Length: 492
Image (cartoon, rainbow, N blue to C red; front, side, top):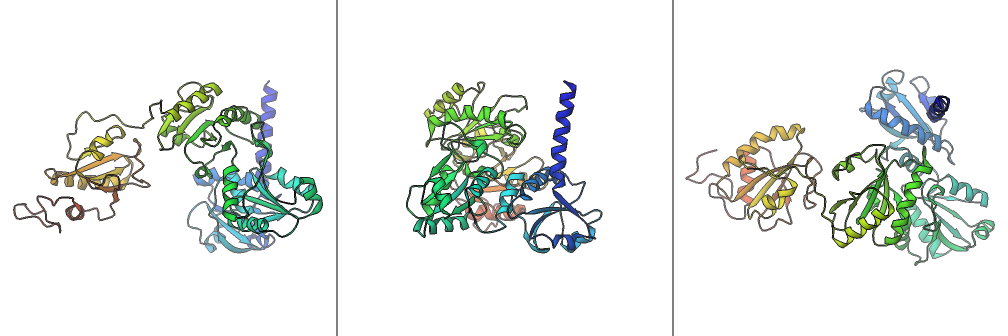
């Protein structure tokens, strides 16, 4: 047993080393001369101590293993900016780590702005070389193309010029950074496929299953927009593999099953659970979207659903309905429990999960504290104009603002205005409020709580007073509309 474990460790280490060897390491002495040898190269400028670089390196190595075998190949390069590559990094204005740049024939071409995980890097860099659609000149080339892709591909088969062919190439240009396209007009390829004018979406080999066809043929009008809709309707199949770089493709109502999804190290185990999800997803085809996600990549999302994760656990299930309300499968994952869970979500039989701190027992301070469970009470239905700050406990700007915000609330305690704050890291923020940084402040007039306005004014007391005085539904008792204190109000 010990020998088998040792062999397994050695195989994994050898595999990782092999991938690492596909990344070319260059320095000041050979960067320009060696890079000029490659038509297209992606260069990672890094520092050995950088945490982000350490996380990127294994993904970068995996991508290099695929891209070096691409036709045409893409070379992945790395340069240590702290040692042998200092001058090169300075020359190319590297200010942070890791910095990724695309070079062509040794000359800088553009900043890399694509994903930073292996599949995303591969997909993005393939769009940087060659035409938007790869020409498939033989049956063998077709089969190699299909076998090499890790996501769905779209292939056009055209015996002659047609409206469908024109729409296909327009779409290929439009989606070249997101989808792999291929095409052929060769007789043996068309004969092999049994078509003369068709566009077909092929699913990758590792996702083939008995619940849906391995390919889908387009049957709509010869319009680019309709073809685009077809591609995105079928691209991920009944149960897509949802990752950080494609999660926006999956729309609500959505059921996500989280577990150790890994088609590199454990394809058999990954499909064991996916097939059970597919069995249920087939029952809801066209009404509910389903996906599987790697739990290690979405621990933050699991936390948003109140789900504790351990690597030995069975799959965990979370869902969002059409209104973005959240639900969690509390029972152990089985196809039967999943089926019942989805039916109950659709029927409105389950209580939605709300991430919330406890409702405060009292509101002693001048600033009213909102949590998810009392948000409607203290913000939406309070019948007052409301200024609400969404903050994070660790945020330095929020801490700096706190004394001013407290003073503002004290100044306005006798006005028809509520000054509210909510910890947006510990509570679900209603979808009406878009919070992307801290602090985020909104003004919600009492008669327009469904249309709050982002406050982007100054952060001094006088700035807040002037804004509220101007925007208040009813003129303040102590200040006129310009923010000047009224006669019976002491100076600020």
